[in-house]
Length: 222
Image (cartoon, rainbow, N blue to C red; front, side):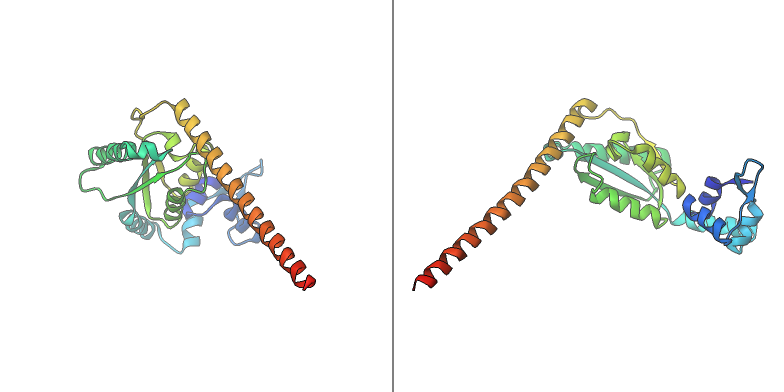
């Protein structure tokens, strides 16, 4: 018997989707006395239209197409310039080859940006590929390389798609406290830049309006 989270992982869907299917009758759960949802393996296989042997073969085919992803990040371009990003990537590559073989296929995602920024392109790319069933596992040097906050949320999300995050646990170039200061400074600089841009646009707009008003006054005097 499968709990709802286990059944969702088995079907490769989210928990909320499975709850909706239960309410709509698309895939009804069996209830315990405590009103918990349970699903049998036979029920889930029947829903997929597969026998157990067919399911095993299908899973093996899916697994064979997935690859390992190496995710590396530094907070500043200074760290990137002195080789921090390349060294971090090299550590991940060495770990991957040592633990999964030199013939292991892997994809590298490298980016420079604050760990507090959830809009990073590399992180978004990783999440899209996980949802597309392309990822077998994700290798990182430290948890904070993936994100400063909300790591446990990402971990649960990845697990929903059968993806495990593996922390290589190598010593980073600088301390966690220093990394956090760099991230905060990057955010302040980014925020200040945006505010300056908005102020500049307002000033330009105001200048154009004043010039236009002056021209109209001159025209009326003529």
